[in-house]
Length: 299
Image 1 (cartoon, rainbow, N blue to C red):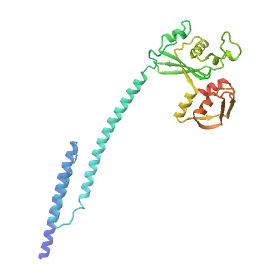
Image 2 (image 1 turned 90 degrees about the vertical axis):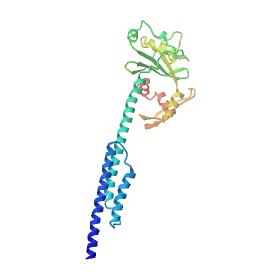
Image 3 (image 1 turned 90 degrees about the horizontal axis):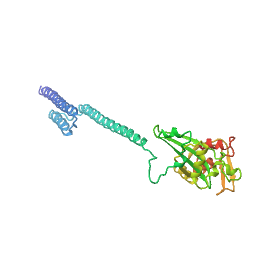
Image 4 (image 1 turned 45 degrees about the vertical axis):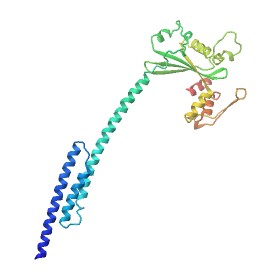
C-alpha cells in the first residue's frame, strides 16, 4: 500500500511540475511576442529564467530532465527571431536599394547635362570654318549642335577622317566618315596623290578641317581632335583587346612606310591586341569596295 501511495504522489507531483513548466513557458512566450511587436530584442536571461523555473519544478518532482518539452518552444522562438531579423534586413535593403536607384538616376541625369564644349581659355572655336553663306548655317545657328573633326594621322597624312556631330539637346551623336582618297583640288599642287584629301593635312589639322568643310558644302566644324596610332594601340591594350571576326586573311607589306608597315591577320574569330587592331584599321587593299570598304570596317 505504501508503495502504491508513493507512486500516486509522484505522478501528482509530475503533473503539477509539467503544468507549472507550461505556465512559465507560456508567460515567457507572451512576453517575447510583446517585445517582438514593440521592435525590441528578446532577452535571453528571461528565457533562461523560465526554463530554469521549469527545470527546478521538474527536479523537485524527482524528474531527471524535461528536455523533451523545451526544444519545441525553443524552435518557435528561433523561428520568430529569424522572422524579425528577415523583416529588419528586408526593410534596410529596400531603403538602400531605393537610395542607390534614385541617387544613380540623379547622377546619370547630371552627367547627361554636362556640356563638354563649354568655353574656356584653352579651347578655341574654329570660327573661320563657320561660313554664313553655307546652306547649313541657319540649321546650326538655331540648334545646340557641335561638330568635331576626328583625324587618324600617320606621318604627314590622315588615314582616317570622321566628322562627329553632337546634338547637346537630344544627347545624340551622328558620325560621317570621309574617304581619305576623296578628290580635293589644291592650287599649285602636282600629281594625283596631292589632290587627295589625306594629303591636305601636312602637319596642320586646320588644313584638313577647311578641306572637309569645303567638300561638305560649308559644313560648320567647331573643333578637331588628332589621334595617333600609338594612342589607339594603347587604348585597345588597356581594354584587353577587341573581339573581331576577320572575314579573310589580311596581309600587306609597305617597306617604304615609316616605320615599314606589315599587316598579317589571319581569317576567323579572334581578339585583336592594340598592334593588330591598328593593322586592321589601316588595311584596305583586300576590300572589293577599296577605301570605302575600309571606312565600313573602321566604323
